[in-house]
Amino acid sequence: MVLTQYYPPEPIPKPHELARGLAERGHEVVVITGFPNYPAGKLYPDTRLRLWKWEILDGIRILRLPLYPDHSRSVVRRALNYGSFAVAAALLGSVLGGPVEVIFAEHPPLTIGLAAWVIGRLRRVPFLYAVNDLWPESVEATGMVRSSRVLDNLGRLERFVYRRAAAIAVISPGFKANLAGKGVPPEKVHVIPHWADESLYRPVPPDPRLAENLGMGGCFNVVFAGQLGLAQGLDVVLDAADEVSDLPDVQFVLVGDGTDADRLRQAAGQRGLKNVRFLGRQPAERMPHIFAVSDVLLAHLRDEPLFRITIPSKTIAYMACGRPVLMAVEGDAADLIRAAAAGVTCRAGSGKELAGAVRRLRAMSRTVLEDMGRAGRAAFLASYSRSVLLDRYETILSELARAKTQKRESECGS
Image 1: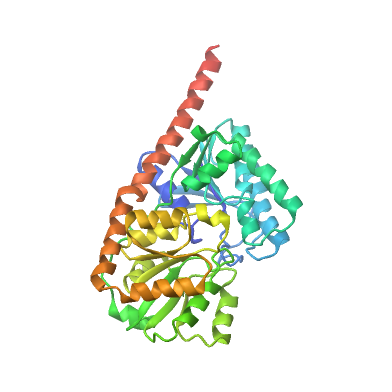
Image 2: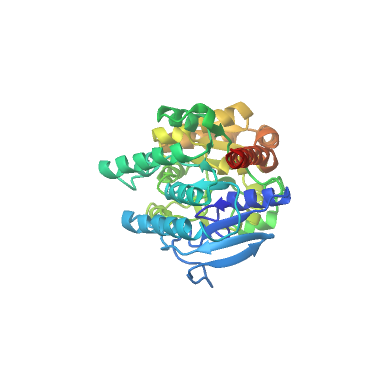
């Protein structure tokens, strides 16, 4: 069972890539998820809430369950969104979906872990908890939650879920160290970084017509792709755009949507920034082609202690497409780019430093930039492709299921 609040057509590809990959390897997979409403917090067109709905995607059975649609900055509404799905999943996921041997639970949100624990208890099966974000640190760092009482309660819930999980997967060494500091045994935690699907994210020839249609022709394009939210701290991009306004060919391109998108558009307009372009959300299959007409691909998160142990998932897609990366995230993410020789790093949270890094990249020869892209692609194929990392997930899930089967057999024999 794959338990996740977000699933395609929402722009969170990993759960489906995992489910599809396991199914291709002969495993029977059922997905428990919500009705699509992310990232806008509104139900997708032609979607209507029901008590449950079965779908089939790529031969995989998907059970969609009701939730309160929301992705606003309201703590109450966001809590209703998370809590409503967790309750529906815990109740209906325990009785629908057929036999289950092991659960893969995708976090965030934290409430997924509680639902996985309930389903696991009632079905008497273990769960692997895949931690892509740290709570309560993340909601505190983004300013979503400021109450110390709420943060303390989230911390207690987090530790409760960690204790109940049979195994935990985290995205970086820093995450593993964080969990160790909370008393989680190191042998229980597996570092499995983000992946990108190599069948989708790959180098493609640049299309000059696409560049012209997107307003990217004839420019040195610094492209940020992904969520435009509080955690990304993209006012820094506007500051950097102001700093390089003396370079008429440099353009920052923001691809995606999120809770901060409208405010950023308004701010760019109010500041008269002609070198910032917003493309909105784009289909996943179009992204390699947008990357191909980009000169540099940017990752940025706010300058917070949590984000120094975070590796933005977009990083791996950037490397897969063979483009140079400008990593404005310190810590584990910057270490990855430096080790792979896949781009340039700079300090987070500083428009001046980001602008300086852009100036350095613009001054580099096309050969040097292409060498960075090739190095990133090589590192991706060796360590970050879906096929490589799926092997590790399959091994852990199979071991958990095997251990549970052996325990049941010994209980029956005693």
